[in-house]
Image 1 (cartoon, rainbow, N blue to C red):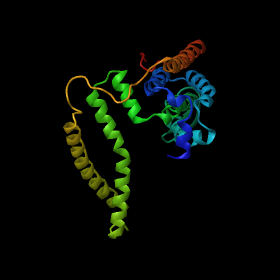
Image 2: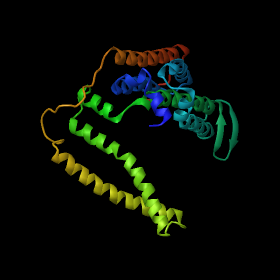
Image 3: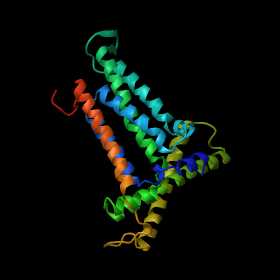
Image 4: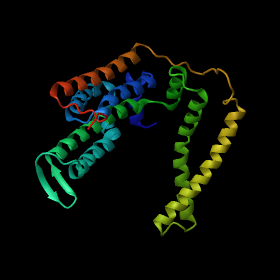
Length: 262
């Protein structure tokens, strides 16, 4: 476990049930997905930034976890600004590139919406353990145990896939077949990893069936998943952020329901 992981798992947020984190993220994201305006996204982002210091993450850890979001959001905005829907005054019109007042506003709204949706999800899920999430989904949400356990087993295999990829690369280099043809080497390693994954998945499925993971009827769980007032409080915060963002957009007249009639 790294220093970042150990620090992230000592805060108050780390003890909250992962189901509540999933629910709070969904409550924030849902209204932002249904509209495309900069007011709702900006209000939600400001409220989230006020609450992020209480998540238990240091600044170094925060930037280490969220830098892909900060990189992807401006790139998405640039694409929308260059090729988005043209409306209002046109500033640049060259070949396929059209930068207008409407495309710039749409780009700003898109960038803020990406940040407002992704940042709380990344911060909340830093401390989520896959086993705790599976326990919560099965015991609290009442998802089928067979589906949850299968997904958990598959998620646990991701780390093994990365190790297998490194081992395959080192083995090919040792045989002298990885010096040229990067594209060809990539597809060859991908096919080898696919075959290895299928074999490992078949063995894992057989082992889980032999141990009774696919048996019908109710099953017992090694750890009980609790859902109390901290979890309800986190979901209430997510709902409050969503309601304030929607109310602000409606009051400002910028609410743009993307599923409504044109």
